[in-house]
Image (cartoon, rainbow, N blue to C red; front, side):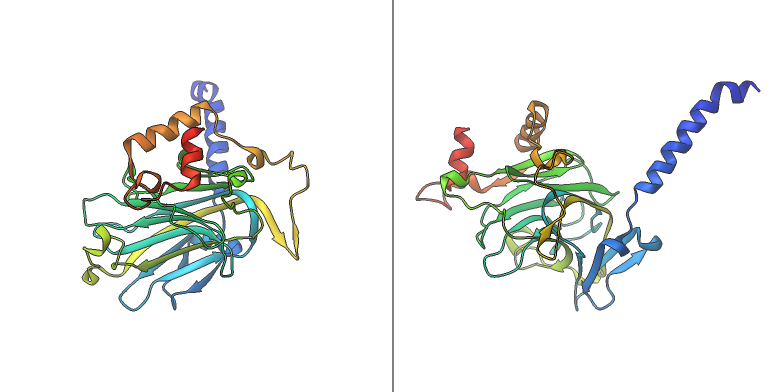
Length: 288
């Protein structure tokens, strides 16, 4: 009786927590469609996990069933382990057409023991060239980690395990287009890019290590779904905190910590690339 009287409440808490944890796992069968790869993409554990594989013949990929216009998007990824040089695992939002919008997470593989580079980019109306790259403060191949994109009318924020690593502000009044009119789908893929991915293409893919495999789970789109020309969101969006979410002082400190300690490349600092002057959004960001 002593055991039950002292520990029963804790047992209840444990069971509730465990139950919540299990329920939190999404079902990718319901959320995405495999779009290419000829069998190299595989659903596991009743759709809780989706793996993508790459061999010399082909990579593989999938996309969300829904289209979105603004939202908070989470995906848990476990990247290709060991020698992943030449490979790219991508998780991104993209619209259609020749003047597309796009918000990119791309994970550039590397030789065994060397860190992955997290490559981010933002395209507006078909124009990109806004790369920022980072190392991670953990091994992204050992376990799943959460990579998130916040896209609302005021800014785009990239998060890793809830920590912001990059912010792209809406500075349309200064003449910089912002993605606000084109609906986007979520896409993920694993493909060979050894012409540029690892050290500018100096390190090639070692096909003796193939197949390369990355794993995905828990896709969650807390977002405005677009269907039949209409948004699922109301005009007020009072029940969607992400719609007006900004970076508070604590988040700003976390962002600066990542950028001070783990940033590899920032296009805004590349004076050789922009001899006529930095892009407008870089100047606005500095002045603000």
